[in-house]
Length: 481
Image 1 (cartoon, one colour):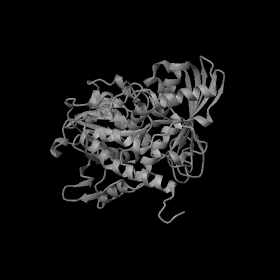
Image 2 (cartoon, one colour):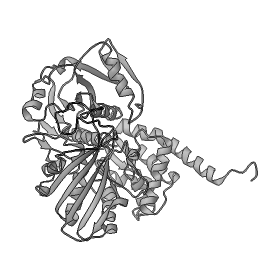
Image 3 (tube, one colour):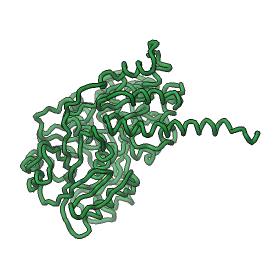
């Protein structure tokens, strides 16, 4: 090869890198200024690297059999950047593919096509007031919620993390809280800057000032003295689960609504976003976001039940261990959970199968469930053995679930993979409630076995944020339709 000639493979790669680098500032501005999150076939481009932007475009060919190059999708992103938009999730891959290969262009220019496809969010009057958010508890879920709320910083941010409430207050507490937010053994380093402000007893993260409040009870905080009003309190302690306990939050000044990050007891609504979030009413002061497992399985069960009907079934959860278990053998009030979590598979119970009926009433009495805790720190799997009302085939069922993941109202809840090599650690950081592993699907006429992965920490936290947005009156559409 002549010294002046460049390898075509390298030249192609450099071109993709250059377009990805040009995309990054536009992606950031669209989110910060308008609350518009850009995706490519379900993969969020929020705060991702240039390499991940390139990798996301590969999904288009995998699903459609047709490549959309970055140089081809870039003009659609540019066209969006020229518009005044309201909050939405816009799939750049679907937008570009529909115009270039999907027969949707109708001889329009790219700019006019983008205006037509996004007409619902162009120049729309934004009358939604920003809401203060308080995290009551700062454990595994609390810190991931903080990360997600912080990454939403911007002029059009409607969910403003104002404070965290924890017990304690001993010397060095602020530094330890900040350090746990900054570094995570599973989810990696925080994407940004974190500092401690001792004078104001707060943590500053990417321009967000988070007040750290110490309290021994939900009803013992006056949030108004910190300038917090009409707040949504997200209780992620798991201590209070009924209306009497969670209602204590409402006795504190400045609190308007309460969201529980666990299954509730009593008559509190258990919401699986994407399935029954329409049940949330303005009058609902206390809502539960159900459990990570319920969020993972309910969207898939809804889709399958709507299409084929489910007579009955069994759900077995292969679940990563949690802080509720012991590192080494020690006393535990629950059966078997006292045995060392990193060294044992532990059979335990799960209420997820029964809890499905709270979000999907048509499944009442149709499911049984059990769980096995395994020695991994994150990402779990639900194995659903279902008896269907209709017969089907493996390919037909997989094709249906693939289309559901791409083109239904459950696009944010259900993801789909056809990889023959995927393992649990590959799903760390998934923003979907569950990921259907199509290669593991088994079908024998009216009997189907589905394997659904889920990041029981991060994916669940995404669902919690979606419920909180709904409680705040923030309805975020998925476009193009």
